[in-house]
Length: 288
Image (tube, rainbow, N blue to C red; front, side):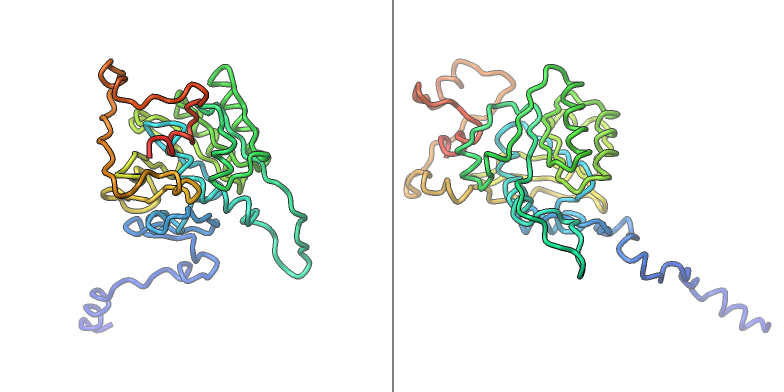
């Protein structure tokens, strides 16, 4: 070969491996600098801004999702209500299709609540569009029992919301392994301090109360580049909109949360009627 030809060959970029052009690999390969996709289906979150930042354009299936929030029992319902409604309305994302496939008869998909911090408020859940009759509430005595209940539900394709403040990294890994064989949603609710621990969950989000009725969401971990800043998601359910105070009035400032309640902070909180219980979902309306 002539020297000039050798120089041209040396300067030419290497040809990509032929295997990368295999159509069977489309959707299974991704670059670390780009937002990950994937061959597995996803479910829409109900928030366009959030879907634009989630790999695949929605909540992943066959995966555990961690939500770290300082107000357990409140913020997660406002964030997850749209996708849970989608779960009940559209059915299994992996349902078979084709000429021989027959539509399955309507059936109510259960949602397992493992150790919710507040008693589930059925009218509030119904206002969010979630059928109360589909809920299964499990109150366990120990963290090990909570983990076992969540793991067994995932294995039988039941949607799970599990409040696991004391879960260890190896326990989260067990749930993630179980989720690989399930198309039902699996959300793990944990305190903000859990962000300092490693986690096998491929998606982790921090959820904070935002201005007004918005939720402030930051993606701590995802398949792709790091997420910068916070997303502000409007999360007031339509059924609660009529309960808002007159928009012409200025709402009083909300006192900042502190690690412990002080007498001044307790006196600043609005008093609830004796016949009303401070349910998790009722708080959204009462403090609006």
